[in-house]
Image (cartoon, rainbow, N blue to C red; front, side):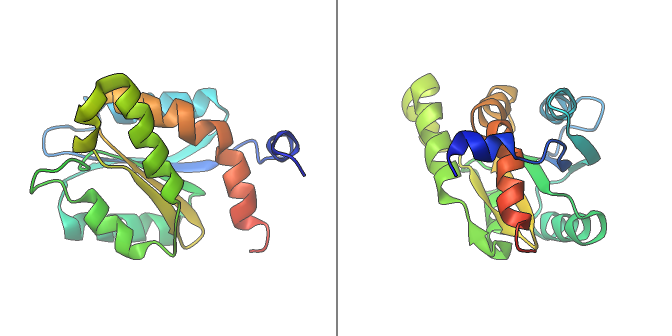
Amino acid sequence: MGINEHRKNAIKSVAIGIITLSSTRNLENDLSGQWIYEKAAQEGHNVICHKVILDHKETISKTILDIIEKQRPHALLMNGGTGVSPKDVTIEAVKPFFEKELTGFGSIFAQLSFEQIKSAAVLSRAAAGIIQNTIVFCMPGSLKAVKLACEQLIFPDLGHLVNHLWEDA
């Protein structure tokens, strides 16, 4: 079956969790998380949770496992904490739980970022993988980066990805 057929047969409404990692934002001023929420709704998806938590390794690990085990989202979209400063620990907190890593996500995100911001793209990291049948995307927290990741990589094939993930589950 070709990509167009896969997309045509893809699940239309995906259950999504959103986590923003920040020491300064909350739900009211979380522009990136709010944008993801609105974009997901426009795409016909169901946002089942939206949280803002501290970029702290143990907090991140506990929160993602709690959401995945109790709320069972098809996808978890995380933004923030992917830079290179010592406080940016999202990737380090999430990656050990990946049962499978979607290595193309980080690579393609870096290429798309490079096209927009040139060599500064090396300062932000992105990753994606599978944790207990949930697709987890980790992306930078800037609104511009979130829009890039969601519009170019996540939402166009989210239902298709979920179909593959759940086809034998």
